[in-house]
Length: 383
Image (tube, rainbow, N blue to C red):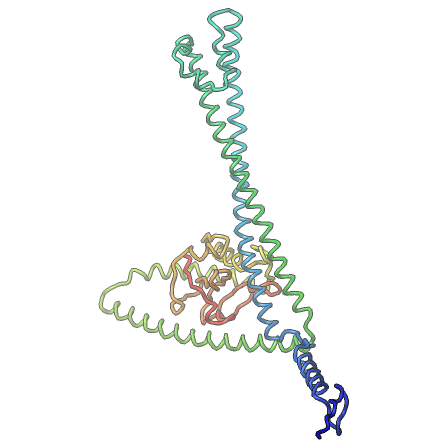
C-alpha cells in the first residue's frame, strides 16, 4: 500500500532546496532591483560644453532677431508719433477754422432774429443734426444772400474736413499704440534671451570656460581657412576680368561699367573708413552710434558717412541695393546672414568683414564664415 506524504508548506526547505514559491519571489525581487537600477536617474544630467555652446549661440541669435524686430517697431513708432502729432496739429487748425465759420453763421442768425427778417433759418441750420440736409434745400438757399451762402459753404467744407482728419488721427493713435506694444514685446524678448545666455555661461567652471574658448578658437581657424579660399577665388576672377577689360580696350571698345565701378569704389572706401574707425566699440542692441552699435546700426552709419542713406533694419537693408554673388563681392558690399536675415556685416575683401557681432562683443574684423558657410544668406551692393 503506497504511502502519501503531505507537501511542505511554502517557504520551507526540503533537502536544502528552496521551494518554488520562495524561489519565484527571489527572482522577482532580483528583477525589481534590476529595473530600479536601470530606471534610476543619472546624477550627471548637466549638458555638455558643446550643448552649452550651441544653446548660447542660439540664444544670441534669437536676441539679435528680437533686436531687429525692436528696431523695426521703434522706427515705426517714431514715424507714427510724428504723423499723429502732424494730424493733431491739423485737426486743431481745422477746428479753429470751423469755429470761425460757425461764429459767422451765428452772427447771421442773430441778425435775422433781431430784424425779424424771414425765419431764423440760419439758426435752424446750426442746430440741425445734419446741416448738409438743410444745405441741399433750395428753399433755404433761396432765402440766403450770397455772403450767407459762402459762409454755409465754408462751414460745411470745414466740418467735413475736420471730421475726416479727426478720424485719421484716431486711427493713427490706435496704430501707434500697437507699435508701442510691439516695441515693448521685442524689448522684453531681447532682455530675456540675453539673460538666459548669461545664466548659462555663469554656470560654467573655469575648465569648461577654457574648453568653450578652445571650441571657439577652432571655429575661427576654420572660418579663416574658408576666407583664404574665397580670397583666392576672387583674385582669380578679378585677374580674368582685368584681362578681358584689357582685351576690349586694345580692340577699341570701352566698358560703360568702368565709371560706375569707380564711383562705387569711392563711396565704398568712405564707408569702410568709417567702419574701421568704429572697431573696438561695444555691441549694444538697438544702438546706432556713435559710442556703440548693433549690426544694422553699424552698416547704416557706415554708408551714411559715404552719403548713402540705408534703412534701419536688416530686413529692409537686404532690399536696398543689388544682390551679387559671393564670389563677386567687393569691399563695401553688405553680407547678410541666416534665413531670417537677422545679421549683417560690411565686406572688406579677402573673405573678411567688419561687423558688430553680438552682446558682450565689440565691433571687429572677422571672417564672413564666422558662423559657418551655411549661415551666409546673401550679398547686396547698396549703391
